[in-house]
Length: 271
Length: 318
Figure 1: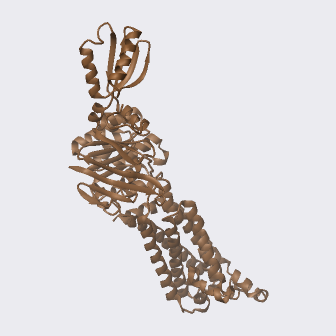
Figure 2: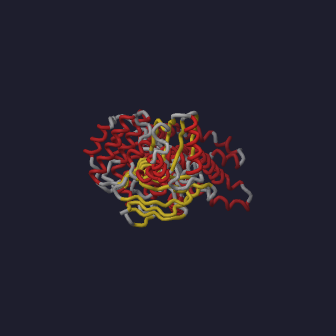
Figure 3: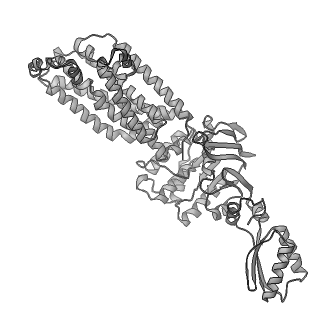
């Protein structure tokens, strides 16, 4: 199975970096759990309530900070694209362009391997690493809930948190898919710049679309951040649109991967 | 049987703005040693990359082992092809063993590890050292090893001896020759090192500005090329008289230089024979001519002539 060989080789190449990053991120999530103090946040309510709505949106839903799930939603899930996403955007946008730049792709693609298998191998290696990282971080996070005395496990909505982590994984895969398509036709620097630009653009739309002119608010549907809004699930335990959004993000990823393969199949591998 | 047949191959870059190759046609017979010659930018590498499906061709046909193929789609054929790129890129964090092992898994055929170990030993490759730590020459050896790792029917090599010291170059050609004897594989070499090609290849194609300008057996090419003739006369007046005779009787002759009693000129093979007849009739022998030499053109001088004179006709080259 040649796809498996590509995945295996890529994992061997990058496992050290991923392990270090995973450990750091897991500790970071645990630290956030230990940092939770409901009394402190409750005391801030009066001050924060006087802030304009736009500012509140900018820094998160303050009122929800008084419950653990809300706190986690604001500081971890709403910013997960920053913690996890940037790393994978940087890695994915550079991967195939670097292979072309370093000419290592010549020897690989001169072997009896179809190009789509090469692209899929590269892609699934990131999907696997993302899965591994989210699982590790989630386990450490849940461990933190039971270890640190400031959180009462009986008050935590575990099912919603597990689904939020699954949702996060699907969202991160969508970010990787966005980076992948750029990597199939751009040079390393351009792919990285455009990848970061697109994600920040998506974030701005996804976070602030309610402040746009009403006629422009339809733009929210173009941002993948619009389909990763965990606050309702975590704070209010409302499951509306969760499955819909997960399916839309999955469809988005499938579409981009197919497009990446089509683009990469047609492109020249220059000298 | 031709193992590679290329017909009217055309490839342009930058959406048709930059010409890569214009009209490339050639056949490579099975078991032959085919040299593909041309300076930088002539289209050698473009042709090779089209053959391997790394570039999409704009027009033309490629047949391998008699079957017309689309090299980008029909990847199974690459199970029978070993390739060494001109600009070699290897994974720096792997060692040679890991690299070969990785490539071996991308093939659908069995890889002869005993052969790989033997070649590694002969080329003095440290299989356990990271490729990033190797010198250019040693990286090239790893590339060579990767190209010949299987019992391939075709070996396509772009500048195979680049960076190898003379001893390793000889060893490389010995290994390739042995491999060819053993399996009757076809060797396609693209190179600038013309003496090597002359020594190793039995057939060559010369590419210029994206077009094939000559394709011939090396021996035929040398035989039909201009001969370089140098004469030393007993007197200056004798040389002058010969000079006049030469230019009037043989308008195809190209005089390189003449001074005092010495003259150097180029002449096509047939005219050279006619000239020798005159010598046989004692027109300018004996006391008139003290010494003369006739040299065959080297592949290098043939190649250079193609690039010096765009109006050269086939066979009138030196």
